Length: 401
Ligand SMILES: Cc1cc2nc3c(=O)[nH]c(=O)nc-3n(C[C@H](O)[C@H](O)[C@H](O)COP(=O)(O)OP(=O)(O)OC[C@H]3O[C@@H](n4cnc5c(N)ncnc54)[C@H](O)[C@@H]3O)c2cc1C
Image (cartoon, rainbow, N blue to C red; front, side, top):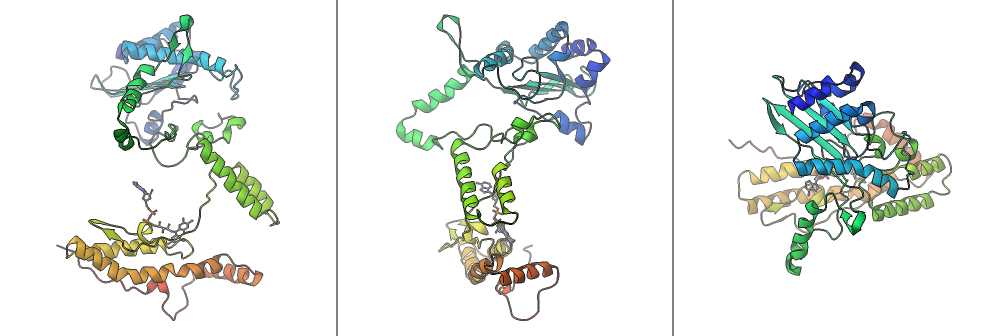
């Protein structure tokens, strides 16, 4: 592998090397963030594309790929590269993202990080649409081959003689066969969802999180084209999109006659794909524990944002639960937690009625009063009376030694 990588590097001129070589693994936070960035979609993966190389260099690229893949892996990768032409035909040779060619078997990027075969760790990354290969070499041994991604689009295409090309078919089939082989009662336990979750929820994030990624974030700066820029990349199904459209319609209908800047806001809402729309509700449970499980915070007693007290309840509840458990068994501890905290929670949940009136005034005078109150929030609250949110004096729990 080191020889194949070095042969490729030796074939490059200075201009090509600028794109082809990156700092060795472990160089620093910024360099590592770039090295570990990976994609399976077609934006700039970072590196030298086939387009910027001569045919003899293409061959050296393929030789390096072969050095890190089994024969079957290499054949599958070569097929996925070629599928770009098939996909282009499926799409009527018409998709246009503003680059000279959109579905493009030449738009695969290779970059070598560090010095192949040298004393320090080194690696390489090859990627483009539906291919991402990463290899890390330490002390002359390949220690990581991930992230490794292969996809096929189209998943199935006809071949001469009635055969079907399914580049990843035999890798998928055993999973389907396993699920279909289950008796109904086992299938009911094994199948979590009738509908498969969107398989590109994590989109092009290097690390998996719970944030939906927008398409404009997938492209390196300046590379996205306007027609694709605002389209959400992933995370939304048809039904979700429909629900979003209904939510927007509802908001637009309610505020249709509001005047002022509202028409502009409604128009902006139409273009946003992360509109936050939710009901306001509270959680009231008859008991906060069952067996060895106890709930705190919103799970047990969400007071809603109309009270402004959700975070305090969650923290106070956790404090009271911890203290209650410190010197007794769980059953007695859970009972003490609930006994000593419930009145406080109830008093705070009851703030919701006042909170609604306070936050969403219905007359010009109340609106003025609310705005004045908000403006003076940086000063301490007036003395006197004991507001609901402080009816509980937190006991001093002693640390258990
Ligand atoms: C619009 C809005 C405005 C608000 N304004 C205020 C305010 O001004 N002041 C205030 O005090 N409170 C406010 N709140 C309420 C406050 O945010 C919540 O009451 C508080 O965050 C509750 O804390 P929690 O730890 O109980 O729950 P959460 O903060 O909801 O934490 C629960 C965590 O569990 C994670 N989780 C869920 N399921 C799983 C799973 N299966 N596995 C692993 N992790 C999981 C969730 O991702 C989440 O991170 C507001 C709430 C909203 C929605």
